[in-house]
Length: 108
Image (cartoon, rainbow, N blue to C red; front, side):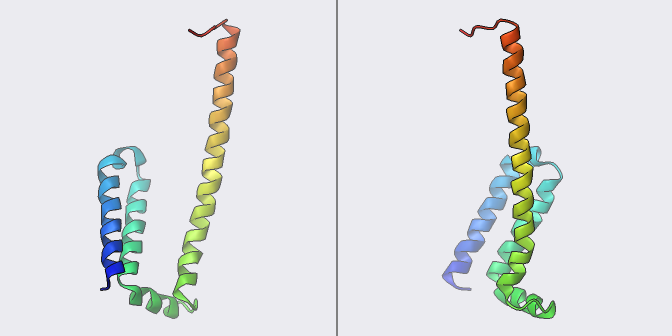
């Protein structure tokens, strides 16, 4: 393994450890999928030959194309989910402020 692979492996292991202690309880069942995906990404970066062989076996072409095919839909999904959450939170905030105004709330 070269220096980048060692640094990347430590980085991924650090992220997994951090998330295990601080995000696991709030993430729910999606945490297992996230941890698996992060561990897989770390493993493929440390052992890039496996990714190359997998892309050749699937007749994708370049290994980076295989990564893009998996990552792009996840990123687009997260974009739309977070956008929906933002719109929903803004709507709830607006409704809360309206209710407070109806009750004559003046602040401090």
